[in-house]
Amino acid sequence: MNLPAVTAGALVGLGLIIVAAELFPAPPRLDAALARLDGVRRPGLSRRLTARMARFPVPCDDLALLGISVERFTVQRVAFLLFGLLLPLPLSLLCAVAGLPLPWAVPTGAGVLFGVLFALLPDYAARRQARERRQEFRTALATYLDMVALERAAGAGPTQALQTPAEVCTGWVFGRIAQVLEHARRAGEQPWRGLAVLGEQVGIPDLSELADIAEDAGTEGVQVLSTLLAKAQSMRTTALTDARARANSRTGEMPIAIGISVFGFLVLVCFPAVYRIMS
Image 1: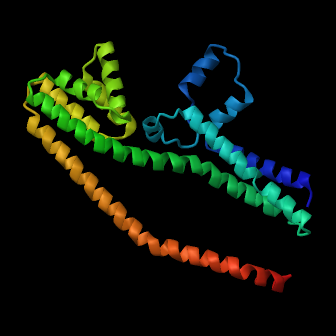
Image 2 (image 1 turned 90 degrees about the vertical axis):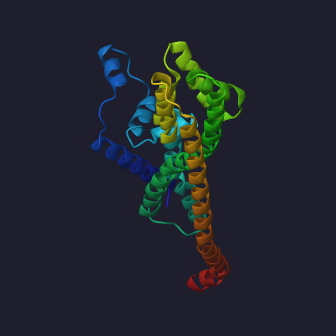
Image 3 (image 1 turned 180 degrees about the horizontal axis):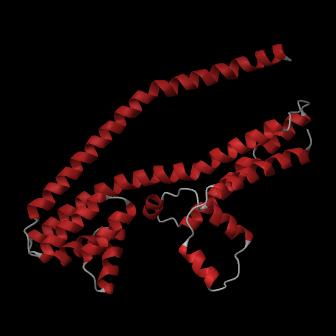
């Protein structure tokens, strides 16, 4: 097997993925349409490739929670895709040097398979990190609710009760809340509007419920102290239940992990003997 054949196979795999993206086009983006109307120069090859890869489903809520732009995420996806497509190339060269050449279809198929699998890795990592961050966000939000309730009990208004805990506490969760409240203050909007938007962006309904509670207190003068405390206790109970469910799930997965480890050890021990018999 020669190097041009392997390279051609990898390029064929990349071409098939691009063709598949063209067969299932996404709705036109507004910024791209405006750029064409304004006569803006066509972007470079890398930007066009990034725009095409962005047509695939993107976890926007997870990226907003992690603070990662869609463009950066798409670049990571393209990089992992190319790495997966070219991964069989050095392995094929090693087999050729060892005197065990492989048909060109083997590295080509392996390149396409690895390309698809590696392209899914950024999605998996983003969803896993976002799931962990949402759990952390809910835990901190329960504390934030308690502090808002204490501020209301001390006679503070709805706006001050929302802003003071976010300014006093530290951590990325309180930093995001403080940033949203500061933006709403500078824009002349009610602070609970910003909290509702943040809850929708990061996919945390509890934050939107807090915004509804604060809006009722600010516009109708409803006493919400007991509601805030009950909501905080409910969030703690839910977090505790989820933690117990994850612990039970990991305990149930331990036999599977042990079995896979034993199987891998047996393959490692038996492979030399089987290889000698077959060769």
